[in-house]
Length: 432
Image 1: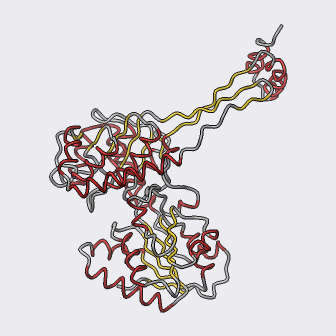
Image 2: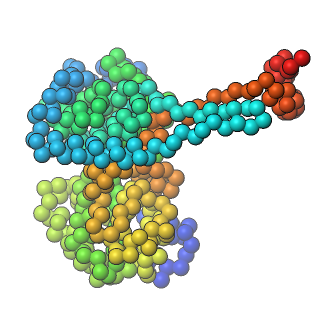
Image 3: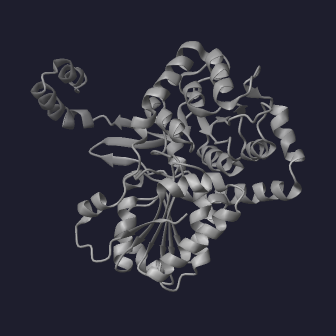
């Protein structure tokens, strides 16, 4: 199975022409919106009953209790292998350290003409986190979603994870939840989990924000409930990577990094961009060897078949131009001068510089979040951040003379807009 080859050498068009020349992502909204809308309506109308029925339909398991008992979550730390418990602790501490560093100082008071404005930052009260399941377990996603909420000061952190065939959430995810201070865990997945967190059911109280990646149905559900709750990151859907490789890039490294993202399953993308036809050929052959030997071959075939490309360009600048149009979730610059190319990159969820920085390190414990924008939304969206769990308020006060100085201007503007009560509210307060 070869990567589909696109030869853009000699291409002289502008950014718009380049976007037209490159394969576009599937319109996830058209594919999923009607099915997701039906799920959201069902959960909103029928609560727990709908969640149980949909879980049986999509996950093949009948559940009595949606919530995982707190004791079972804590006990998972003792059940997982010691090496995993240690890795979770290391990852948690590194993610926590980065996100604590990410928090900017709260701006000081702003004072002008007797008016004082205090800048206040307050966490949301209740955050909903989604970690995928089914094809694989993702304790790393549990940490990535819950830790920045913890840093922000969120009191109630809710986690939804699809149940396994036995109706349980795997111990690795539960152990991560225990490490990250998650307060409630529910064995619910898919669009029905998003609906339950957004609207609430008899068992699951509604949240203020929902974060976390998922398949196209989960991502579409978050899009549809945005406005009912905060949706903290743009379309965080199926996994994506663009690998930029030069003549000296080891083909095996480029190939395995393409496979890393492709093994998450279908609907994602895995693109090689290079100005060396020999490298493209060698990476293509290496991908075939890795896929043939992989226990996840079905997922790899699905991803590469629909979203695997090798793009030939004229040089590093053209490679960066392609990357900026694709705006991938993960961008790997597997070249010696990776830092020199960084100024050319304008759109990517996360960038990994050089052969010693594979995206898999970012997936687990580099520190920055691995919940990243996909489907070209990195053109305007960013990685999940502490600020996604916060609200910014301003508190205004005036001294004794400020209203007399500024009030006439307020009256003028209010009367111009035809709002007499606005004007009167100032007149009634003027000194004397």
